[in-house]
Length: 365
Image (cartoon, rainbow, N blue to C red; front, side):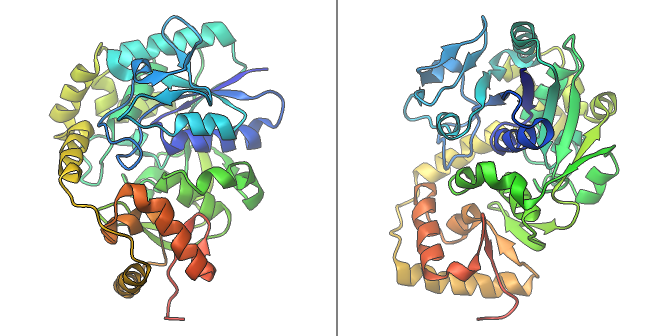
């Protein structure tokens, strides 16, 4: 039996899809996870999503869809988490290529569905920004979700839209997301995260990391991203809900606008018109800025001293947790130093490690 899960925004949605597959469907076959190769700049310094031509070693599934096996490699300077995910998880990861717009993604979906004849098709979004109107001031990365939503609404097959971890992506307030949620499908428990425990040690997704931590019992306020967003970790955080696809499309103005797009350039233009920006423009600007930043040596004594100062300040804002990605940025380190920072902090203060987050206690220990 084959199942198809579409990771709405790529990145951590693909990891969450692997968890969802295990808890909802068990071991009766494995899902094919259709996802973007669209990682944060600390993994992939090239702005925007990757196309099949950006890899070597892909396997062709259909005329326009390729799977990413463990032996695949992104062509430098591009990077991707997908080959390592394929090496560590039993699922097949297939590549969404958005460079032909929503019509191209819909065609890819139709081809995969025709090939696999899946028993179910789920569209999964962690956080809920797939439900954005497009004008929310906190919205940062709507384009990938809008394209997958638009494509899934056009295929000739039933697709179920699922939102996990309402509000955890920091794109929409959790209360706004909850107002759109339908039936509760599942509440993640600690054991549900075990299959991806090793993955979460290295994968940079903040939203899926918070989803796993919340499933393991973490509660409080987590500070994330370069902007220092504050994300509540509550009893609702580890839940998965179904959402009506038609309602989501009706609400998401950008998804409606990109329905007939045939290129990523055209979809970006829609995003600039409706949302006032393109997230790929943001990545282009940040990539150019990062290129000019001098390398900073990771000195343990300096890092731990600066960490103490950051924790004192964060504690005053009610912060109880943060991510290693955020710590890398606030300590002015490069993305390539994230793993070294993580190892230093866990080895020096292991009691603070609330996997895969960093805990900030209420008072200095």
